[in-house]
Image 1 (cartoon, one colour):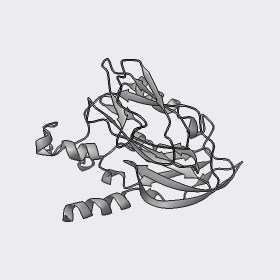
Image 2 (tube, one colour):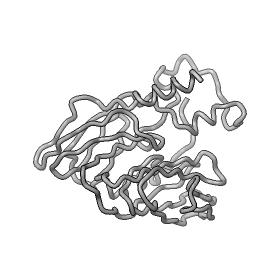
Image 3 (tube, helix red, strand yellow):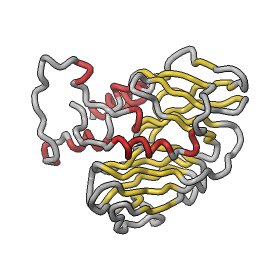
Length: 247
């Protein structure tokens, strides 16, 4: 089964249109694909599946539905962040819009350089009360319809944003001084990055944790580099899930 909450198209597009670390509208000069995304299970899905949560009704999947559509998994276009990192520290970027709608915040994982402000805008007709878990830097306050709260992480690390009113809100912010730009794969698993000429390491993040292996790449100024092999984002996720099942 897949998540049934609807996301207005304009809100979804705006979440990524303002990702200023993504390199704008320039033509990508580094392209690749991911594989293994069907193994990525968001924590909020796993929690909702527990009988005691009483959040979902689970039904026997119809045999007329193809097998790949019966798998409960994340959506790479909003849940999987591909980050390009360099050996040099990067300056803070411009404000990035984080779209609050449909009981979620999009994107659900993002990697930014220190000091980059995040602007949480509420597109829902009701209020939210966002806060950063286990931190005192972003306390719960009312975020009414069409209102915006801006916040920047105090330093490198992993931050988890939640909502006092909606347990389905689970967004992760990775602050890395060496991140140059990020991208999100499309439905076909393809992604593209706009990078200055130089050497980089590509890293994939899901649910606030790195998945898959580091992929070195040398970007060129006047030609496009195609990754030879897909970035398998399901490796680390599969190992973690097997470990949990054995406990």
